[in-house]
Structure formats: C-alpha cells, structure tokens
Image (cartoon, rainbow, N blue to C red; front, side, top):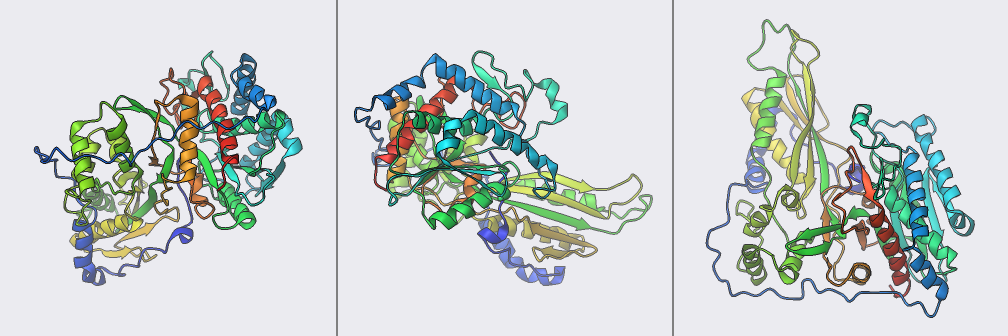
Length: 577
C-alpha cells in the first residue's frame, strides 16, 4: 500500500511553463500572488466560540444503513458446509500454513529495479508463483490463469451469464524491502511467517499477502463446494505496487481494458482502509476515494569555489530559506461535500452517541447552507477546522499535505556547493489539483529568486547557472474519482459487512491518504473500493505495522476476510448490475 506513481501524461498535462528568466517571471507576479494568497490558504483561523442556531437538524438520508445481506443457499448443502468450514479448527490450521508460507517467500520490490528479464531481483516472483500453484490446486486446474508482463497474475472464473459485468478482486504480490539494519528489532524474523498463537508475523503479513491469500482461499473454497458463478470473477495481482505499479497493475489494467472495455467491470475491491472505533461506534470504512499526489523537485544552482571566500549565501543556504518559506504555512484544511469524510461525519452524527456536539452543530449549518464550503480560500472552513482537532490522521483527510523528504547537495568541506536539489512530496486534497501545489511553490521560489538575483525556471524543463528550477515528477496523480456511496455496489459492500459483523457496525465511505493499484483502473469501473474486510475485535494491531518492523496480522482477522470475500462474491452474483 502506498507510493502512488503514474506517468504524468496518463493523467494530466504538464504544468504550464513558467518564464525562463527572473525578469520574465515577474510578469506573472500578480497571478502567483493570487494563487498563493487565495489558493492554498493559511491555517490561522479558529472556530468561533459561538456557533449560533442550535435547532437545525441533520437529514437522516446521508448515512442510511442497508440490512445485512446474505446470499441464498437454495438448499445447497455443499455451499453451507463450505462456509461453515471456514470457521473450523481445520481451516484455521490450513490458513495459518498457507499465509505463513506466503510470507516466507521473499517478494520485495525496489525503487531502482531495472527491466524485467535484466534485473534478477524480479525473479523472486517465479518462486512466489510456484508457491501459489502448489497451494491452490483447484484454482490452477479449473480457472483461466494468465501471466501479464511476466509476473502479473490474472485469474478468471468465467460466469454463465456473459451479460453481467465481472467482479474484480485485487491485491499485490510484492512487499516493501526490509532494511538489514532493522532486522534485530523484529520480535520474529521478517521472513519467518512465525505464528505465535494469535498473529502471523513477517513482511507482507498485512500488506498485503493476507488479502491475496484470502481471495485465493475464497475461490478455492467455492470451487471445492462446486459452486458455479453467473457473474465472472476476476482476480488481478500486481507485483510492483510498492514502487510504482506501472509494470504490474499498469499492464494488468491495460490487458483487462482490452478485454472488457470502458466501465467493463461491475466493481473492484483492492486493499485499503478497514475498521475503526470512533465516537463510541464501530465503523467499517471501505475507501471510495484517494488523494492526489505530486513530487516537486527544486534545484538551486550557484557558483562554486573555495569556502574560505564564500558568497553571502550558498546554494544550501538559499534552498534552506526556500524550505523555511514552504514549511512556514500549511495548506488550508477544507472539506468539500464530495469528500468521503464529509459523509463519515454525517454517519457519526446519525449513529454515534458520542459524536461531538460542536461538530454536529457545524455539520447542521453546512447542510442548511448557513456555513457553505467557501470558494474564497482565505475564508476558513469551520467544519473542517473543528474536525481536524481530532488529530493529524483526520486533518490530512481534508488537507493537502506537504513534506520536504529529500535533500542532496554539497560534496566536500571547503568546496562551495554548486547544485542542491530538494524534493517536496504532496498529497492533494479532494477538491484541489496538483496545480495548486505547483502554483504555490512557483510563487515562493520567485520571491527567493528575486531576492538573490537568480533566474527562475518554473516547470519549463530547463536549468541554468545561477537559477532556481522547479519540476514535477512523472509520478503525479490527480485526485481519484469518488465512488458513489448511494449505488448498488456500495450497498452490497455494506450489507455483506453488516451480515458478517452485525448490525451495530456502521458502514461509511472512507478516503485513502495514500494510493493503491486502483489508480490504474479508473476507466474500468466507477465502483472502486479500497477495503481490508478482515476484522478482529480483540486485536489492537491496527494496520499491522505495515512498512515497518514487526508487521503482523491476526489469524482471526484473516479468517474473517475469507468469510467476507466468500459472502461478497456470492452476493454480487445474485444482483443484476
């Protein structure tokens, strides 16, 4: 999960080139200032002490909960027996062995991987494929198994009704690397697949070999029960999600698009958010949206020389000044009505006994039109600001984030640095675009360039001596289209979840601050869900320490994921979409 990367040309045009010199750039100063001051507004406001009218009511239509949805057995004892088997100790022992075995097979992906076939680090996936083939014999006997771009895996279970769009289940085979220096910090070795009586430990245990194995266990279980789908079921597993997704999901989505065309799938379910206790209520939060993404590279070039005779400001000093300006102010916290978290707040207001009164009043004002989402971005969004007080994990659901992640410059003491580069990462808020970040950084860079008599190259693809240059990474990604929460697919997701976990669970649309392989599937379906459907009420592991030491997953969580996928596939099979 994470690392959103997509070729810029596939999602948007490049930034409009800025003037090639500082003098020409000055012509855009009024526009840059407008973008800076009315675009990414400053967070320097607080919610008024008095909210006003307390009698406004919130409509109950925002978060209606569907009834629990169970598929019909039609007297099929084999299906009933197969589902009950998932709860048995025999299945528990078998699933521990399968998931543990998957974790033991290293399948790391790296940012600097070369071409498939040339870089031998790709070859780990041959071992993983062999493991899957040995572990799921019925799938490999009865389903169509295709390999796309060598290591991408595509499983197709053809349905009896070709008029029904397929159900797509997704996961990725790769994991983030394990830095050697962190291995002593692991409670159990990262490739051990150790089972301690409650959890399975190791890299990939919760991101996301658990979801991949759960999908395959679902298909194997239904095959063993001799179930036959009306609606085709497709499983698509990329192999480089952690370092771009281009070779895996990127190629798999192209392959699927050739087969099924635009909007050719009924629904897609990939890894994503799961369950959370909030305001005294258990929420399931299938992700219906993802923030956008852009990295901006800033290069400062200044004359070198011996540091015994330095200029007043070195390139490192100048770039530090620019970083200070960047970090001095954050982007505005703003909650638009199409942000899934807006609906989450309504769900909390309607269903949670401990939902904060101030938030409820502000939400009612927004609904009544008394406190609209403001188009002038210098004006604070009081609802968003109040919601953000819950912590940074909530704040950044409603705010474009910025982080200076990488800086390179200087090669030796006594040698003035001639070229310094900085990379600033942004996750773009719903309702904004990467252009907002580009415009803001261009305005700040122009200020610094003018002060130090440097030329400015803002997104024009050029670089020159004594200059500041800005460029956007090709990994730039627009904000994902938001999946409708009032459609039949969401109703099936929610009904399946409430059938498995109980009616006390409130299902609300979620939003991902990171990105998944679904970024390549936008043209294949309007109904994309990023959801980890496994849940263990006794487990406090949260996301299971993904991307860090001691990654693990609860076995009960994993078994419940298998149950959920089994119910979901069959529920999807019984509706016409």
